[in-house]
Image (tube, rainbow over all chains, first blue to last red; front, side):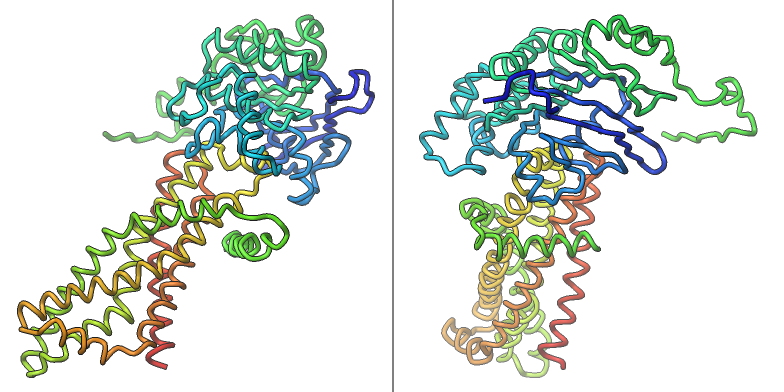
Length: 285
Length: 245
């Protein structure tokens, strides 16, 4: 299905990506490449812009400036119909699963198959069963998303993302809110896709165990003064050895370091005593 | 405003042009939405119409009796219902019951990333979600309006029959002698315009929800308020055009 791993053309190429939200640069000159067969981990603290970066790569947001190429094609200026053609080649697993609540699990997985192909219903049924078996959820076709657990929703989301056998899989926080066992299950599923089927994966996460388990390449976005910039990039081993304080603090999960423990603005005592420079907030029951 | 007009354009494209290019909306979903938007609003629309027919007949009887003109009660009831109250009241019920539900549903889908998921699966949300709701509303509001007007007439009949000693036959005869086809058509034209206003505003408000549960609540309120306001303005304009110009 996919080209050999030494295919020199990158599947994703992001160059000097800038996204400005009302004067605040959430992404500030991000550049990286993802090669075929890689599992690229995008990590960073809360609010560093990693989900925003993912939304730009899948074409859900338009950048202020910079270039994003998917499969060698620039997507930033594409029309909806052209973007739709590229979108059929990748799958996205959303943080919440983003299953359509009005449809059953089976209908959710069948949706992209039915929308993008004219297949016999019996073949669609077969495909849905196969995709659900891949994520270990055979027999759950008739349940609504509200009737299954968070971990199962993510697995159904993964089955739906893989419904059209994509070359590229994006996952937004695939393990957030899952227990450790379910986290491993989702990790193993992602690994199977990349190793057995040759799918290229881009995973946004701040779960370090999961990141080092599945990642073959990593980038880390900074916070504070480094907001929206890549502060480290490399293989998992290179990241572990990276001397950058913020990277080490993040990997080890230390509460204080380059990213301060407290994010309070201004002087606490002056605020407390009602210094003229600060306004008093009046709360009422 | 620009977004709203763009949505109208997209709805027209995906309803009228896209099917010729092989991109169909789901017919089954249109029927499903017709049940949700129209059929489920039937009891409430009927109750409102019946009550208005009833009270209209009582008020008319009270006033007309003083002038010795009780025989005109059915005329007044049927004209008021067909031209004004039928379309207007049914639309008010549908705004409160179905328009708000459409906004809340789409808003929740926006907040829970369902609409974004459709977009990245290369499934156009206008074709997939909006067009079935649009067609369902455009079909069901006029149907409900006709139904509501008849139920209102039954309300009027109950007063005429039991309080004013009209026979059923003479009530019906009186009504149909007075009403002209144009009275029915004008009401239907109004209901089509109202349907357009209600569903486009409901969808527009739902699709642009931001910020969680609070955003959904605000959008739903906004949808009801704007639909009512624009519908009342449209109603006054159409009445002026049809009967006053």
